[in-house]
Length: 272
Image 1 (spheres, one colour):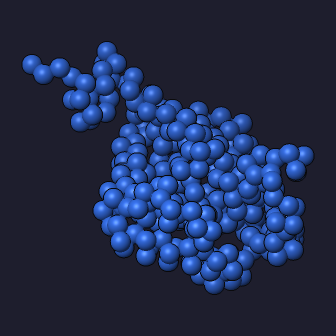
Image 2 (image 1 turned 135 degrees about the horizontal axis):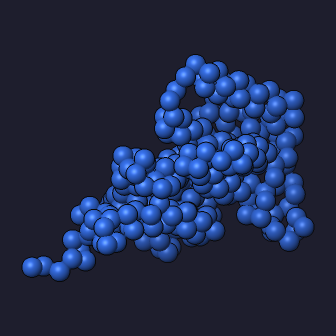
């Protein structure tokens, strides 16, 4: 089935004597990001339902992230763990459990010879070959942006068809170069606003934590990968982000939008 799901050659995924699972996303990194999305959902579901079955799915999700050997996805999962843990009462038992779990994961990666993933620990992240390989593309995009600072060069301009930036693997820089400062500002609002809105409402709105976890994960993912702009991932992101917003919209009395989302409701309210 490998040839059915991806146009790449098997050798393309054999890195540093370590195989990676690709799932159905054609790319192990995208597969890891997809798992992050569902991991965020089950973390949120566990918080609101306390159903132990959701905790089982969290464990399965973490295992799949490790086997995808997507370093970005692993770091995103760790980042999501921070707000998730802060929603609970932190105790010594919890801290010991987290540290023990982390040690078990590292030991398992060592035993299974997951050298691609272990590079995060054994090497300086800035000196990793894959990271260094992105630098020329990032430098090129910054140079392009320097000539079109406000609106960018445009998403389909000729300057973005060269091979060197066919996959810049940095959503922030790509948006900065193609849509300029204006586009990057709007993109940051999309990522940050759900955190500001739902963190303080996490105990009032069902699955509010899901919006926070997704935003935190995608803030990290965008540094070395495409996230929202990747259609296959962006659709999943939009669907899952719609869950907490749907609960928020119907939270107010008479289901009025202006009672659910501050400031936005005025756009739909008739002036007296």
